[in-house]
Amino acid sequence: MLHRSLVGGEWVDGDRRPNVNPARPDEVVSEYAEAGPDTARAAAEAAGAAQPGWARTPVAERMAVLDRIGTTILGRAEELAVLLAREEGKLLAEARGEVVRAGQTFRYYAHQLLQPQGEVYASTRDNVHAEVRRRPLGVVAVITPWNYPIAIPAWKVAPALAYGNAVVLKPAELVPASAGELAGIIAGSGLPPGVFNLVLGAGRTAGEALLTAPGVDGVSFTGGTGTGAHVARQCLAHGNKRFQLEMGGKNPLVVLDDADLEVAVRCALDGSFFSTGQRCTASSRLIVQDGIHDRFVAALADAARALTVGDPLDPRSQIGPVVSPQQLAQNLGYVAAGTAEGATVAAGGTSDGQFMRPTLLTGAHNGMRVAREEIFGPVSCVIRVGDLDEAIAVAADTRYGLSAGIVTTSLAAAERFKRDARAGIVTVNLPTAGTELHLPFGGTGDSNHGPREQGGYARDFYSVPVTCYTGW
Ligand code: NDP
Image (cartoon, rainbow, N blue to C red):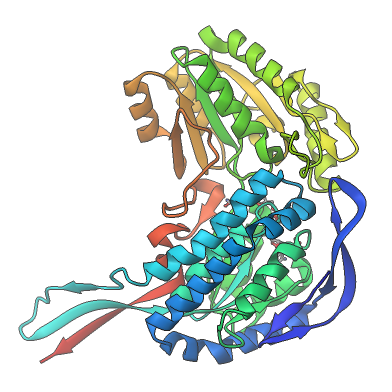
């Protein structure tokens, strides 16, 4: 299987690169033709040429295209899920869920177009009509990470197309196949050539060319905080492009003494280790009150040790491989750093090939690197606290602010946490990960810059308000 870039409706060849299965690093899942900066610039130009026509296409036609894309994804869900699981390493069940989410996202934005698209105001002047309309942003570069190879492209591309923009998608180099298949589906949907373009290339070359291309009006980026800061600087320096950044997290899960222990362990196990901990919303700091601490740690360590780590296509597996040798080395490096700073490995801490055991570090404090820096692997640390006030203070003591959770049976504690937690997503008695497509998604601090993604809020990035005054 070979995937190529798509520019102005034409598939573009390039040097062949292998796409390997992280569960079996000697197995080549597919090949892709690597694109460089010239292809990226050509894609931006093609998008610029196609965008005005697409923006003028009647809403009913735009809806039909988006609906066809969503329906095709859903119809091919099983095949796409197997491909995704093989190239990224998440469990087949999780991959299925992700593909279905992508299909539903396209259908959702088809119908979003029937929502009100502007506002009418009373004018303070006589015989004047005042209204706010929306026009498309223009050409949008979409730059995505490897951990959700089809869902994140979908939740950016679908609203971008719905609101009349043209798109250049640059997925992470580790996961070209899911994006390549998505591009094939979009190309076959009746969308005019050039409205959607795909660039399969490295961030530092092809991605960089999109940040500096004069024809790109906006960049929607999801990835690491360091890369995001670079994207922001380049966007400002090269034509004052609009940008939206979804970045890292160091998400706390607070467990209070009054928590249901079973619920607490379930939330921590899911949030910390499922999807191999490779989620921006993963719980990587477990902030646990004194009275429940020892029982919680013992039960969670037992549950973590009982998890089956294995091939994502094996239905018995509960945790898949780490995505790459580099990411594995980073994870193990953090375990070493944690123990060097005084934490104890209560479960896991080891790897076998590219498979890492779910790892629980206890005796951590919020000053340790494992508590401050995003690890992005199946590693979580436990921080002991005395009361709710301290828990809230420790939870907020981070540069990030994506999601934050609490496990408690106290309504008052839950309400306080929802009010005071410094995060864009707050969960009560649920894992910190796990969101819904029709609700806004995004964080605070170094986790986010710009308008929220998903749901109706996506319109704020992909369209520009135009204030109109009409005298009569
Ligand atoms: P990276 O920041 O390394 O890469 C993200 C994307 O940016 C990739 O497509 C990458 O391309 C591209 N890129 C890299 N350098 C440049 C550049 N100079 N110019 C333009 N594009 C560039 O993140 P990862 O892919 O490693 O993903 C993991 C990170 O993503 C974690 O920090 C995680 O928290 C975050 N994330 C955030 C989410 C959120 O919604 N908040 C959701 C999911 C992940 P290439 O891969 O080819 O280098």
